[in-house]
Image (cartoon, rainbow, N blue to C red; front, side, top):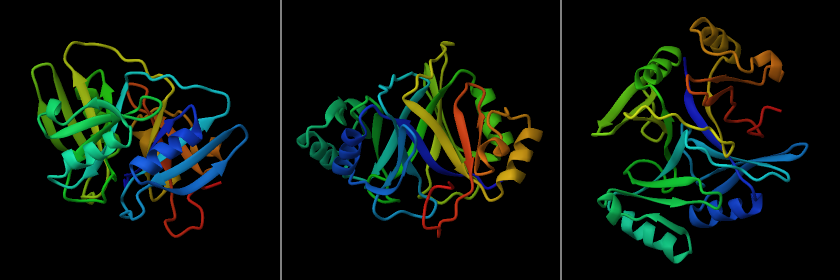
Length: 262
């Protein structure tokens, strides 16, 4: 199954405020927009993007504030090796909220927050455009089940892990993914805690070659039938992982005039 991570969707309370934040501080540009009945969807990303690079999807529902849960962790964005402090100080000068500075993270990474409190990690990479999405982190309640879900149902590879005294991080991505592609980080805390999804985080989206065929394969592999293709006019579909994280499947023509299938 070809399941490149296409985008991560977050919900925001104030569309213009969020767009200004990401366009000003991360230098994102608007890739496409869809105005629905009572909601707006905007795709964002760096000006230059690798074909396997992931976008950030911002969704705003009119008249609704969003509530953060703790089942979702953060998105991570890239800056060049050796430039973490420089880019972090630039964000501070621009008035971005100081959440976890490089010094408190051993000089390896840092965290800031967007207007709704979504955590944005800054990591150092020598691949991908500056500020491009590096990974999305979600929390899981059973590491074996989570790894099994992604490796069995989507044929992802475990490409890295870090095990500490109280938690572990596991990184998974499609086989033969480009270095510029986004990875998925699964965080497992050993204390047996449970998590709340909230509504500020939306979903992960996988770009597939054959929506109906890949969906049938997922059903055969016992993935939850949450929103099948036929319930979405065969434009996209949704399943859920073992913890309730929503996962969209979408065919995308990279040469099409619009990024949206509708």
